[in-house]
Structures are given as C-alpha cells and as structure tokens.
Image (tube, rainbow, N blue to C red):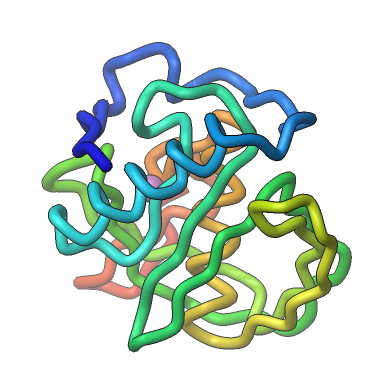
Length: 157
Ligand code: CO
C-alpha cells in the first residue's frame, strides 16, 4: 500500500467527469487500498478517486467504524432534505452549509464487481452525495444555489 497525494480544487482534474470502472482487477484493488490508507492518514471520512488524480468512478467512505467501497455508484432514490455542514479534503479551509437528501439508495459494485443496493441516512447520505458529486466533477464550492451562510442562516444566492 502507498499514500497518494490529495489534489486540491485548483487542479482541473477535480472538475472533470470520471469514467466507469470496467475491470475489477488487481489495479483497482491497489487503488482502493491506497485510497483507504490515504484517507486514514488525512483524518477524513470519505475520498473519491479523482481526489488522488484518477478519473474513475470509485468512492470510499469510512465513518464510525463503517467502511464502504462503492464502485460505479449511482443514486437511485433520494428522499427528504437535510441542511448539512460540509468540508472537503480538496477544498482546504472551505466550509459550506448545503442542502442534501436525508436518505438515499445507492446502487454500487464492490471491488470484485458484485452489485449491491445500500440505503444511507443522515450523515451517510450527505457523505455519499458529496463523494458521488466528485465523480461528476462537482465540488461543494460549485453548489452555489445551495450555498448558505451558517452565521446568519441565510441563503447567499
Ligand atoms: Co470532497
């Protein structure tokens, strides 16, 4: 395993759309293991492959002793709303208050290509949405129409 460098928002890679994973091979497993090590080292709770410079649809989430590897994740159902505070390892110093679904169903493959449907609520729902946004080149600072000022609780748009 090896630590990878987390790139930040001025890098254009983070603004591009990632491609589907088609080969569930050793190369993917190495990427996942490296991403997990990198995430643990950074103290974050989620990481998407573009953040380490790889434009593939790969996301990991590690929060409260629950670890998920989501390959080609797709949100198939969104319900409810929650106002959440988010930061991003690729946007150091930025904190945004955004609106996210309260619950999502996500279809994704595991590292061997087996498909599952996950139901994520509350913190996990916002985390999954945040990481899946990365795969479409969307950062928290891009979501201007959902940008709030936490101090005044006012929408800044
Ligand atoms: Co992020």
